[in-house]
Image (tube, rainbow, N blue to C red):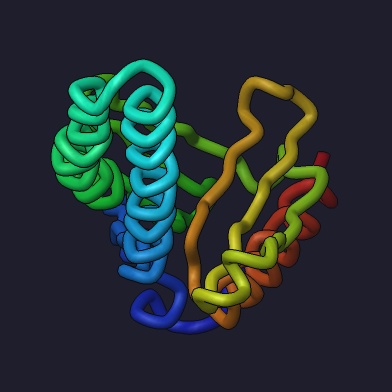
Length: 167
């Protein structure tokens, strides 16, 4: 039996209600991009500039130029992530060039865990990891608000127990 209204659970008949990821994940990934760009620019420009000659210091411009392109790609990738809870399964959609949609039946889930590393905790994020009997259908929903991650974990666990009891 399902608990809660369709608006509360995100389930509206057979039509999935897609949810995006919060912007904190994009901010975290872009911050990492800026930090690594600085490190690479320093390494690419300072070391050759000191060891070989000042003209080689121009290589420091390469990482920032690439970072502008990656900045945009990170935004497109973040917008591509979606998840939806349906009556019998969880859908996870992602990808810009190669789109991938994973369907995880509730009755096949063996373990649902919430993880949050130090950087994720700093940005107030958590990930929900789903483990099934088939390793190919293991899935993750990254960058969720910790309260939403716990709600999703509890709901998936509850539905998984209810579906697997009938097997």
